[in-house]
Length: 309
Image (cartoon, rainbow, N blue to C red):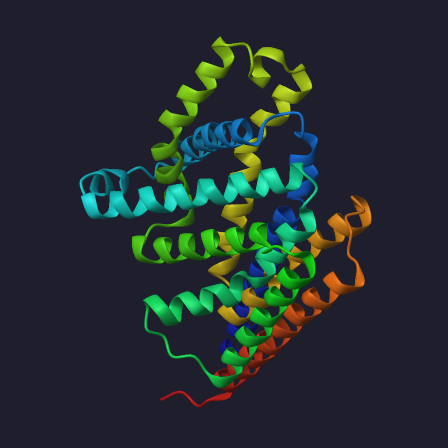
């Protein structure tokens, strides 16, 4: 076997491993409705408080094992970075809260819509805030998605606010994280560290009043709440490991696993309505994603075939 052949085989194996990690992450995120439905008896705000605290505990243990604390000192001495991470923490917690509430109240399908349109929201945020130029096909995709949202608004008589809040909060969260220059594990640690004092205070208050799951819930329910830490952090670590090994184009296609699984759970497991008029809006948005993804894939292949300078 020649050196070139060996390198190609190693690169292919590296990419396959990355694809597996990324797919596992998005499958885990897609299955989240099963977990949050299990906690339907716990108020969404309390679920988020538990998720924040136990995520911090879990990632702190991981960082202690890896001995990766050196980054924290410089971050704590940077007011600008702390301000950025505080804003990203607020966006993340808002996204979590709306998502958990939506799942608990029978809006899994609309929540999945938010993550379907999130890639197009990211494109628009790049255009508005990062001055990125949009290609004609990207404008076409955004137009189709906007038509889908308008159709859903007209036919339902209200904005699909859950989908829009989830897409915008996660889009702005990604924008903040793009400027923070922290790894996935470090970023989640700092964000939960910022949020945890408030989460702990709320949990103590609810427990003292006898209204928290810790005070009134069954042991199994408490156990499910404690699982929020690893269930939040592990998919994120899988995603980070996968993203380092595969191209952004591939990652962009794999990301649709999560909302697709959520959509299927909402329709077939939880029997949420998907009438003909509502389905038209989804088809418009799916068409936008097909156009956007096909163009991204085509450009990625052109770039891969281009000769090196």
